[in-house]
Length: 355
Image (tube, rainbow, N blue to C red; front, side, top):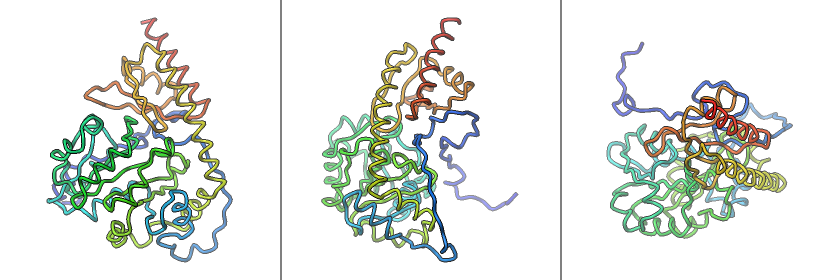
């Protein structure tokens, strides 16, 4: 065992617990907001002896076309998580600066800040939704980065574009507004990407993990003004994306692939409506957060029902939300997978009646 002392912030760091952190056993996986669709690829590689293009041209061109921005406004990263880390590492000075977040929200904002010894100004999702911009500013304080997960994970809450624009306007010259749009394909017309053309302090994070059904590829994008991205280009690793990843990502951005992605999103959105109906009809569901994204977050009357589901091989994501431990997030799967959720809900009722 090494005797080298850790920095205090790392010693105290609580690691992010992803849906795949726990070694669970199951046959239906609805816990990580993954797409139920698979992609079959046939590819040949005869140049793996060479280093890859740091920012592969075909991918940058394809994503710029898809997002309707200039290629100079696109930076490819190893998942949106690397985008979060790069922003904190580039724009925040350890032990001096802070970020602002609106909780409950995606846990990697907090973990990344703690890793770099950056303070956290914590506001609530309720404040973000209900207070005007001027009222938010005192709590945001001197934060260098303001993270708005939109749609928010795990609540699904979606802030209107005008609210994000107002926030960016008030923070011009003071802070960067980071709009995390990991789930935006499920409500495509609500994207804030147009704001990067007006506000030099807005950055939009995107991913191929959700709607594009490529979670295993670990591909993300930062969309922002050239001036905002310029210092990040100095900080990012020299070869962040492998040749294999780049070629697969390029195929996902072709016209036919985008049409298929949007078709799958439509199917998943319809399936989500059906799941919500089942949950609304269950007397063992206290509340449903009917937000956007490929998931539904709900509160059960009893958290023991989650253990019952796990015994059946149905793996969903339990949460502690608003100080209560009986919350559950269900990813939207295919028809067969969601039928298992329906069966589980009915069996919860049988168990309750027998007991």
